[in-house]
Length: 167
Image 1: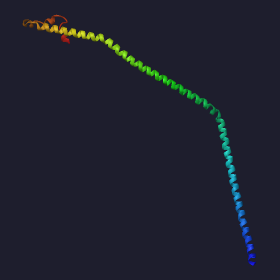
Image 2 (image 1 turned 120 degrees about the horizontal axis):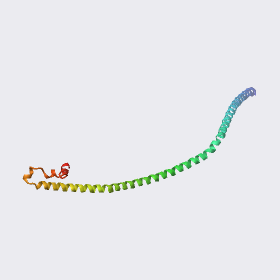
Image 3 (image 1 turned 60 degrees about the horizontal axis):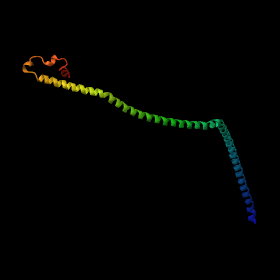
Image 4 (image 1 turned 90 degrees about the horizontal axis):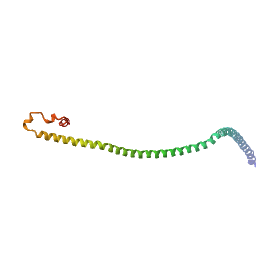
């Protein structure tokens, strides 16, 4: 028993020391937990302030938010109206292109009609000139050798022969 009596006080001292270590650790843990809780409370307070500011901003934006829906609706109506106008302009341009083509065709026909008398007159003048030249050549061909010394008959007649010389 002697050893048991000797070991018992050592065991009590070890248990007391162990309890003291557990108590110190628990106190340290409680202090650390208190610091963490204090810091968490500060963060929660700051978050509460941020949420309050956000709620205030949302409250200030609420009238603008209510106005956005009608604005978007009006913008959509405006875009639809612009699309309708663009389709009408497209139809007008198509009609203008068709009218332009028809006007070009009519203009060509008018040019043909107005140019026809001038062409006929030009052909008639050309034929008359050819006839006068043929007549002049026959008159020159009928001369005798004695008449070659005298003036040609075409010089005496005004307009005959001069036209062929000018041409």
